[in-house]
Amino acid sequence: MASTEYNSVVLDIEGTITPITFVKEVLFPYVTRGLDAFLDRTWGSDDLKEYIQLLREQAHQDVQNKVSPAAVEIPTEEKSSAAEVKDAVKKNIQWQMAMDRKIGALKAFQGFMWREGYKSGELRGEIYDDVVPALDRWLTSKKIYIYSSGSVPAQKLLVGHSTKGDLSKYFSGYFDTTVGLKTEVQSYKAIAQEIGETDPQRILFVSDNIKEIQAAKEAGYQVVISDRPGNAPLGPESAAFQIVTTFAKIH
Ligand SMILES: [Mg+2]
Image (tube, rainbow, N blue to C red; front, side, top):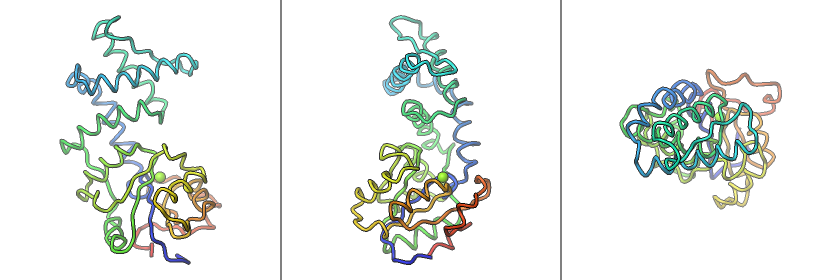
């Protein structure tokens, strides 16, 4: 495939190195199912207070912006009992997760819960079997990066506590949507600049998402589509690109 040698590899997570089901069937339910017990366990800690404050500020904005269905506001402890605050936090998180929101305050809270799960060993980031051999191959001569819409702390937890062990030694950097949306050409240009690659042709991007692939291609990257079990079906636009079902096929 590669017409030019590449120096850097940028990898998507969901649908590329990790099954989409891990996020939908493990990570998200971990939050929704464990929320009550987690809040009881961590209630009153400074960390939790910070995350709740972020949710509170977001909820306030959501009410002002008349987000529909209506946002659940979170009162302050000065004005309400701890039980009322806790109840509002639960309802707010359930409300946001039911909408599958990708907003900073929610992602930060989810990451806070996942951190505990990863550290205790209850959560382990699921990585496809063919990924580590490819990382080993690349590591000798290339830099490897992650670009995912999950927050950078959540990315680090997933690869740092994975079913294949701690993979953090492989990665030279992590990017999330603070660099820009994954479907925008500008994001890939910004990443090329940040990793110091003046020729974007020297970067290989692997993702399951055709819009991301098209944006990276337009930014000048080499691209490969990852087609994994459980991914969304690929449309006719994908025929213009190399499609692999295993990283063993990426050379
Ligand atoms: Mg993906």
